[in-house]
Length: 158
Image (cartoon, rainbow, N blue to C red):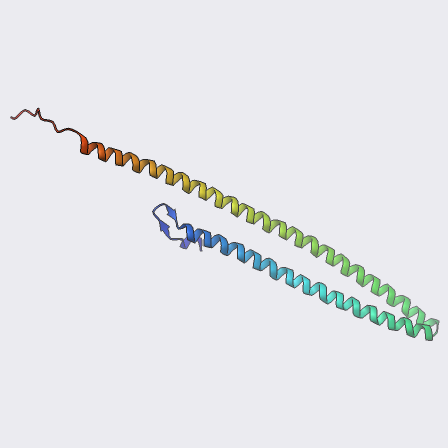
């Protein structure tokens, strides 16, 4: 898109450059939002799975109270499985949270770099406008002085 900027008298169209920067910002925010939604859905699914497993574990405990020692061994295994699943889910969640935090930091860094770039472009455009203004004033003064020069009346006819 940057190659398609219209050129104006003093460089690229400021409006188009600003629109492009806004487009990039919105696109990054949209992608980040989609990523967060995806991760939130995964977390929700894991939480539902954990809730479901906890419910199954509770049912198994109730049956265990009515059953023999053999059933008690199954309950112990079920608890271990739920704990491992919870630990795995928690570890995965923590890892994904760290990754999201790192991605957010990178996105923020990119946004800051873009913002710095915009500030630099604005500074350069201002310098260019100031220089052009000085040149135009000098040319205007030169044109005005040409019109005010006295005509040479001492021309020798030959």
